[in-house]
Length: 269
Ligand SMILES: C[S@@+](CC[C@H](N)C(=O)[O-])C[C@H]1O[C@@H](n2cnc3c(N)ncnc32)[C@H](O)[C@@H]1O
Image (cartoon, rainbow, N blue to C red; front, side):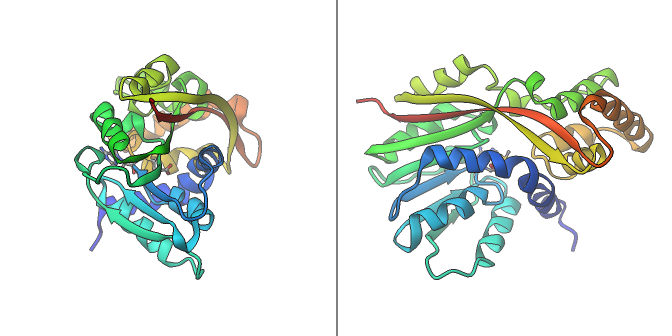
């Protein structure tokens, strides 16, 4: 039976993690620096890129707890993790629930990761306070979010085209583009920010068509915005995006500038 959520989660992995989210998750993992034996909570885990990158670092004495409120994302993450053939894989635990309703015990986590997640949570402060409760005093939290939409040229083109056609774009993924707002959520939840980085990456797709169809099929928020368009309007929309991205396109690829913030925070003393 066709499950549209499962198809979207698979498209997210195939079209967007391999190209866009994967490189940024790799950078956030460098900042998080997971160590052998650590216990990690990966919130808003999506299809499990964080788990797959961190598992070899924590190894078989470590554990990674993966949480996402979309059961289809969790299902794809589990399947992908099972296909990894390695005796030193981290132990796992899985929850398909909102990060807001997770209730872990006190003093159990070395690290919480929230890659491209803070902007999606309905109550980020509550989630971060719960994380603080469950972190060891020596623990740390690493979160990443997109920068301002204007600095993420592919999504900016999609949002601009939707707006010009009279449709509401998906702005939630960019809602922490302002670093003061992002810092405020962490500090008001009881964390001290050790590092906040704003970095840029060029992300390559084979074509604008690949980028737009990947987003339309798998992006957690933007796919819903694009789904407002009927067939004819989609064609017009696509032509507009292609025109808006012409400066970044060449014969065989499109190289899209992206920007994200990565925060490393620790419990306030
Ligand atoms: C952009 S994806 C990021 C996934 C993954 N961390 C990555 O870097 O590929 C955002 C994820 O947050 C999940 N999500 C949204 N709201 C959530 C919530 N309240 N609790 C847990 N997960 C949530 C979505 O289902 C989606 O998988």
